Length: 250
Length: 250
Image (cartoon, rainbow over all chains, first blue to last red; front, side, top):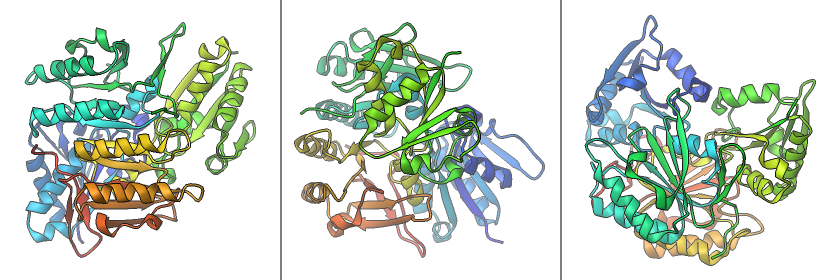
């Protein structure tokens, strides 16, 4: 029997956001591979081996999963959110391309999930309702100059922007620089959404005008969404709605 | 009893991609509102009234849903994909902002879904595995010059790009112009993914080098993904894998 490898998105945290397709694949897997907190979301059962691993070992983890699939096992690599958005799918295909020829003939499938920016956007309204971009603010794998160039061009294009991995203990300065750049480029009252751990018990969401944003408002569990010039805030008794209208004037 | 309004994403087509959260809300709704083919995906049952409506009446549909919620009903507006990405959520908040004050105090929630670009990306690998943007190519609600400006800036930023609504019978020319612009700006062999009706029985996915793309390869049911300069194609016996590596050099 030949093995297979599935790279599955668990969504942002709540079980109510895991697709039935992903649940079905997990129910049939022999091995689940992934970063410790994501593997911890999979219930142990007879016949299933869990392989949790630490952060920053994505390529090793991918190779281990590919090796097990080659041995005929039914392997699921789990990611939070969507596996194709700043997550494990790209790492697996990097490993495939640089690995033995047999790996590229494996049955490899990617199952999409609810990525963090969509869950975050939904919490406040529809800030990504018009053209937008998604940028990983970590400079572990790309130079900071490239991030800054993309931020400038995204502001010029008037995209709404979603930032993944905005800030970590190891990289406290990048997000501060990104905020300064945006504060110089966009209007003071541009709405910014800080959405932390959406759909988990730790969820915190706030909407802050750009000129009052502080770097400390984000950490590695936060997705940051910056509105476009057309983005609107609807004040109300409860938390405000934030949305970007469908129409735009040049 | 006060009403509520939920704007729910049904995902790209397959029932296996509808989140349990959305299924639960549909099971308790009194009224479901939406574009005809999306409402047709909701099973009729006692106590549920279906309100299908035609395309291009998004604001009327949103107002109707808000009025029913004000009357105490439990209303779900259904969108395909994610309601916050070029779909009904923005239209509902446009109606809220321009409507009577009571509307903004309603209990309104958005439930995310698997948006078309993520389902399409998953089918071929991980073409959105690095920074990317999403652009609606319809010029019904924005001038074509703005679309063209965004395409140029997105190419300069070296984003992978996902295009929604690339081409319709009423707008046959726009996508042809977009392709010409990209063919002049990006390399000839930049991989382009045409993903039509992903996860439905009509699914068709192909990967075509940019210089061999034709406007006729897309229609209104197609999402088009254009790789970044770093995007890789892994040839194999089956359909190729396409992915964008996590790392990038300026």
